[in-house]
Image 1 (cartoon, rainbow, N blue to C red):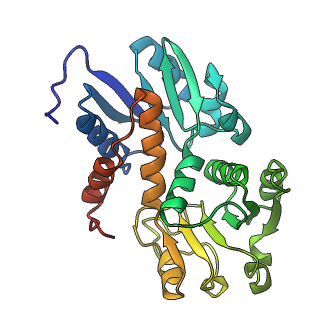
Image 2: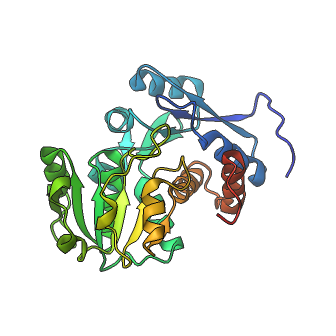
Length: 286
């Protein structure tokens, strides 16, 4: 592995979102490019208009992009093609520029599934409580349902959780349960708890998306928030003897799938993990 020398042949990849100043995606993807020996660089941009940004990808020859909040849904409408999973989800987080044609993908759900599998959490046949109703919730719920999980969607907005639940039909129809209606009886039927909301993210690390007393030892608890590394939800789950899955694992594995879509190469996951952990000051064995 050698240091990158930027020249006229350097491939450009990027992140589109707002805000992105906190993102560790540039650290992760640039580490992957270095490890793979690719002449490429990844930068973060905050465009005011995602449609304009995507047109610029074609004009400037930007080879691939990650899409984050608030553009995931709108970007789908500007893509030249969309893979079936992303179409079902209704949002994209990845663009591949194929000779001026932008193909949209969604790797969020795949990243979440990989994170759960790394934590030895069984997906098929499990009941997953998905907290939230946004793009990440949709991607994760749809992907886990396609892998054989039963899905319960919960949140404060009854209309939005019911709409999301209605879109998930296999292996059986998803259920929508308002956050205030969660109780210990329902939680006894749940195997996996997944927070897809920003509740607990810095600068409000004291917040928690569901009451701590609803967590039980038989739950696996996954929080997609990765800063802080140990959210209040995960700390409460650990104290109750639950299996805990950190958000950084989803970030890593969805990014690994993006790298593979862009390059056709196997992602150097170990190097990407080391870069993220080092950047965030997290011990390698955390």
